[in-house]
Image (cartoon, rainbow, N blue to C red; front, top):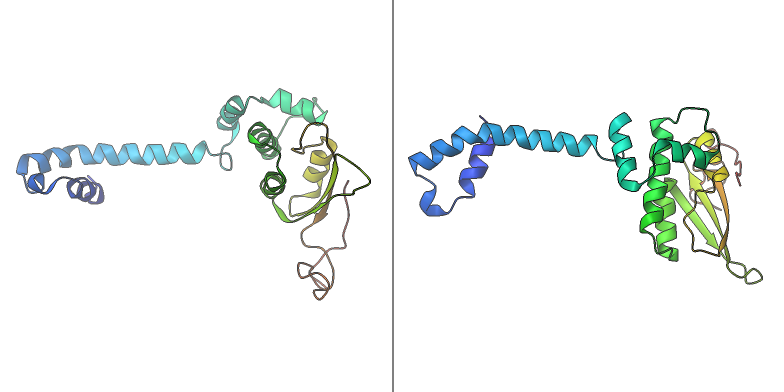
Length: 195
């Protein structure tokens, strides 16, 4: 029996029932089971979250988003290899964002932060190119995954609009007086653009 659960249950009773022996005994009898149920629900929420789910639990999220592993493999155009949970999680995030997005500029910028774990996003437009914009994303995601995402054109955008999407590492070398997000000597990597 959990004393914290019993105290929470008795504390939520109206004042006239708090010190009643039979009610306290009943709550004492069920508080252990209620605490176990609370812990199971908490564990289920953890195991079924997109960040923590693995294997079959991640496949269950894929069913909700309507994207199974085979369809995700087809998006990446390499159907012969197995799809890791880490990469499948990224593709599921993309699909769920695509399903829910109205494609406004603030949503697209927010999506970049969620999908690419962006530390910086630069949005540009060129008046000479109608229905076109550019995004430069600074990210800490491993280079191999970024290359796959760029190749698969994983970008949420309005229909009929083209996007130039490029990435650079979040820990790039530069001078802090020019770019406050740059890392100095010994800390930053020389920038590599992936388009």
